[in-house]
Image (cartoon, rainbow, N blue to C red; front, side):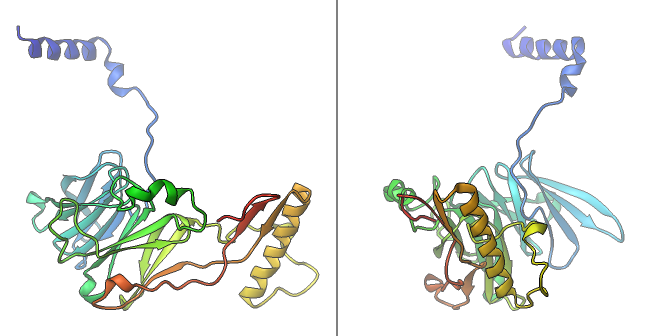
Length: 300
């Protein structure tokens, strides 16, 4: 009996003697999904990321029914999917630091036709610009594929430098390099960028920063003013809640730390400049929350 045959026989014997091994529960870590479902532009197909199995699942959409028609292996831990056309879908692979471009023209022959290498832990992808041919992908400001490798240690220990990136590609001209060539990489002042969205006319892309220190908080009932009418202007309400949070922070830490609260809204990635993606302007409200230990430095 050959070595391979003996190994197969041994595994079969284990399953026969201990059938419970095949059904033993286990704990599985999965990356958080950001955009797990997408419809094709014509509404005929539904695409779903299968995060634990590293696949893109394809369904035909019927009248009140879904029919599974294909399963395409992609990168590790896919968390987002977006359809650029009826025949092309992009899948963001969180663990692989990559994006899989999938040809879905024929469900029977659906396959990955290009892999783009991007920054660390990519999370979302949207299309905007002329004919929806500009692809925007959120990543961290680091990673195995970043062009910042020569200075990354300095970058990650220097205050005031954004920790969130948005990689921008021309979907019709991805470049000839192995991992594709981005048009530009936009750095945002925040940490852990996640979801993206696009204005109805496709001219502006918005990025939501998950951990941004941007004065976003859960306000308890005790902080809501009861002695007067609710503040109507949202900026007044924001200032009121920020002052109450500052007071709480000073009281809890007995003056040992200072918490200054100003605010920053969602970043506007592109107030679109067609034809020159290297000069994408950023639109922010001024300020960012800062925490300064006594005797220490101010940092984001």
